[in-house]
Image 1 (tube, rainbow, N blue to C red):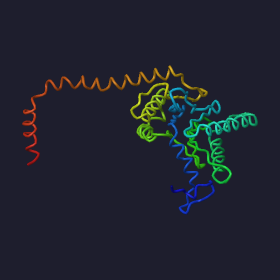
Image 2: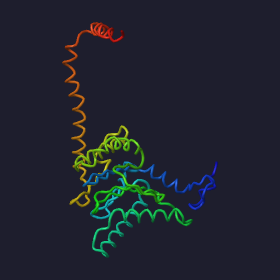
Image 3: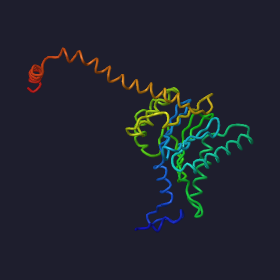
Image 4: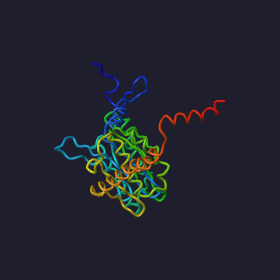
Length: 276
């Protein structure tokens, strides 16, 4: 069996200039259950897929509260996610104790990225195998960041990470232009539809997803499962009524239409002048 001689520690570079340990950590994010976030001017919605190891076990939490104005959704190694969320929580507490004001989201994300980057340049450490979607509000508005195991961070209007997240990103790319002025309920609706895309045929139920919200004047809270199920049911009804209404409207036209042979003759007669 072939063994890669350049992945024994994180400080060993391959001849192609790659750090395999960092790439393995990023692959762990891709293999984790999906998580996504989207923001408007005043609200941020985080959602995740809950996958249990077996029918006898419960799922692991994927969305954590950092402060009243900051929350994080993770994909990848949950243990690493808990460590980093605890670090972020401590930073917020220390900053509030020292300066008596809430820590801005951008400053916290930079500190988190620096902490992750240190693990890519020390041979006795390993990269954190978790991706974090950090959503928060500060004096400059709502923000959504993605922190990568490599130490990079990016700000997004909406983003999805984890297993089968490409389907959710495709949905979000089609709809993101409406997010800026969207209400809280509209953001939740789009988040549920994006989560449904990642399930690829599985039925969306409140037991397989978690939705959390924070906004201006609304500290972080997680939606109750009953509320989420009611929202899912209402959205599915709207989806079912659309095609039925179109079919009902198209039926009278079909009855009044002439036979197929007459239609073909009419079409030919109408096309003749155009050909000349």
